[in-house]
Picture 1 (cartoon, one colour):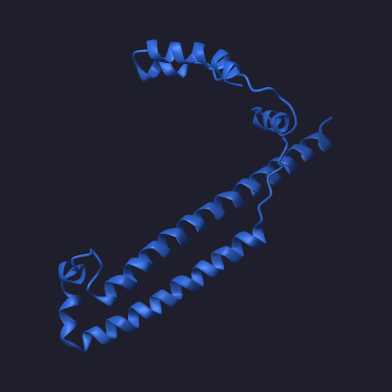
Picture 2: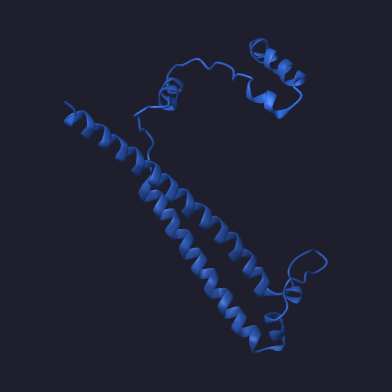
Length: 161
């Protein structure tokens, strides 16, 4: 196996080492991948005018995942709001006016204030939610565009003289 890898990749590695600019890297061909099984299907799908939409959207599962993330964000939002109300009626009211004080940590780097702990969790969950939502929209649009192109192709074939 290592000998085969050396035979395939050594010429490309040598060219890569000799190249001087990133533009030179563009012209290095990718190693040829034998077309068999899924690799053959992937090769057919990669052709410029391929009409083989084989991607599953997992729409129900993706949307269920998004809804569960939404529920987690809402729960954290409620906790954060409740903690803000508690802090606003306490000596910690100053936290509403100073991120510097809000973000103070102990000697172990742990947040001193519960409000900041919750907000950090909320921030992470919001990032995950936003990324997931964006990915789902992209998958749905990809699928929609493939179906639309297939329908348009069919109409053109059906009504062409």
